Image (cartoon, rainbow, N blue to C red; front, side, top):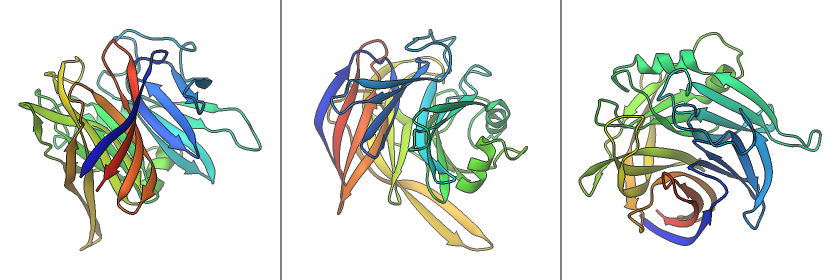
Length: 301
């Protein structure tokens, strides 16, 4: 895998970027300490602010934030939506999500529904394959067949794992159409170290069957506190189906490349273009206090 940063832009007016979605030429961004979903213009100025909770442009302290760490596009009844989810690293404050219906020709407003994910995240915390009672959901990718969540590992027992769900079941759950929580298959993934620090998942995105991930090596002992960053990775995961007594899915590490700028903490990416084996993507970084950046990437796999 070859990775090139073609352009980088600091976004001083949006802090702690954590999620990005490119859809039909539009760019949507979230920050983990922000209450607002942002839609950008072509020149990267803010076009629309969509308040998810609290007040517009509000930046919250660590103990108060919902820690919105992941976002994905999805279609419900042929209408475009975004799903935003909290990390679940502090219950119940971060056991939340937001379903956002995007504007259409019939309604030009963004419509927002708040989701209570406490029972779902509590269920995930009880799974010893994922964690010893500590959760940190950092990546979300909703495809036509499967939905994937990425749990970020740490020194206190949580493992780097991809959780796979049936997309129809997941969408039924987030709409509140079923009382039970969706049951995941758990796929632990061993990521490499960066300068002696374990790299851990920060984001997921799928493009035409290729599942991409972002990861950063952050010297932190738990799912709550930040730490020094030694580098970041972008890679692909191999998703394989077998038909033995029903469908069985495996998710394993495929390719990986280090971000050319070692000091950047990459948080998420959105792949928006494919040409043969070359992909173009937007990625976001979080400087933990400084200006976040938007990166234009070229990825050759």
